[in-house]
Amino acid sequence: MDQAQLLKGVLELAVLAVIARGETYGYAIVSTLEQAGFDGVGDASVYGTLRRLEQAGHLNSRLAASDSGPARKYYAVTASGAEQLKTGTDTWSRINSAFEGLVRQ
View 1 (tube, rainbow, N blue to C red):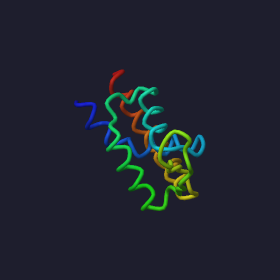
View 2 (view 1 turned 45 degrees about the vertical axis):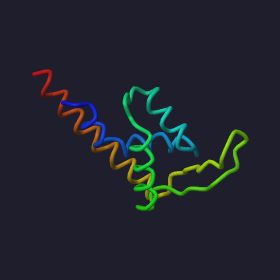
View 3 (view 1 turned 30 degrees about the vertical axis):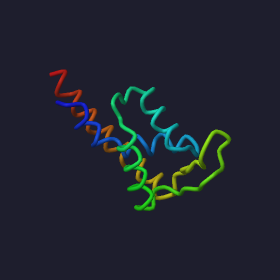
View 4 (view 1 turned 90 degrees about the horizontal axis):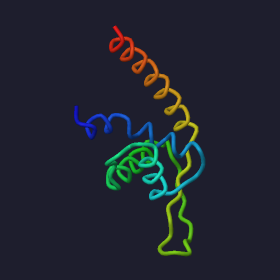
């Protein structure tokens, strides 16, 4: 299976997990995902995911001046975003356990 296809299914959950660690901005989110092993995650995919999560009410954002260029948009998880992360994490754990059970048989 193509990693890009699998990544699409978990990108929202991964982005929420990164932001749940503390308020952060887009480029830092992309970098954190890449360092965690989400190879090939593109800026456009992450920024699109951020827009969708914000429109759904799972994220709040604010603009802050930057010393090294244009203002940065910082994101924070809302209460509904925290609930979405918990629900998604629980679902992911169940799927992962089921998959591991199939692979080990």
